[in-house]
Length: 373
Image (cartoon, rainbow, N blue to C red):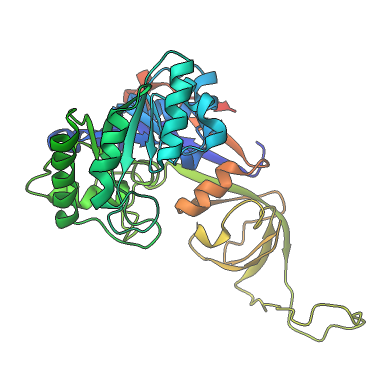
């Protein structure tokens, strides 16, 4: 099988989604599945929908088009502020988008009017993460302008946490967002269908809070894909952490000792790091590098240590004596590594357990189905 590749267990993704959806349903919160880390991969998106997600969220128009071209008809919301140069396409393929700029909203309204449709607007409010967001004191004024504008409809408000500044969500922040939703409705009139409390970092609050207030939606990617809390990187109870596995091929096994470099040219690098090996440790090189992924986001297999990486070589020290040229090594990834690897053109994706109807069989024994895309 081709290397490098990412093996995706769709059964585990369906399980992760279903587990989170069921736990949040009792709290009155629905799940919008975020597919940006997997570049809008249709089979992965479908697994999240099969698990109970009510819709999809994407940051890039190219990924939305990929989903639509694959036949996805579910609601898709653009969660990055739309680019003015893309408003016509956005209105055609997205039911709604998250917005902060009136000039962009006006352009979306004009595009929707030309296409004889209405585009949903969710206003992002700044709650401390210091990335995108309208200042809270301006939210009512902006909301009223949206309400008065033909071609668009005010559908809700949302906030973001734990992305840029590391500001974690809290019960106090969620109460403030609830209060803002009430204020916008009082000032602007229409009922807000969506009050999106944030992303996967909100799950500890959502699972433990006594009252969720007006929060009725979470945009979840990392928690479903990797089964972890983005803030602590701790595993979320009941979720799989290994739905994605990176597989790389060994292209060299060697022992290289530290010693003087003879005959080097004057323009040679001034710093060369050589790592000695012992009789218990083998130094191996894999066909994978910084151009493919965030190497720092790899979890090393037991008995292995990261020595270093260049653009297309990954150097590891390992006690695994069975590894030879042509052998494969398997790694778990964090969110940053997964994003980079899924976008890398030379890393293929292999899908396992891609038949929802076979879940009962998937739980026991080897994987039943494999497809390459």
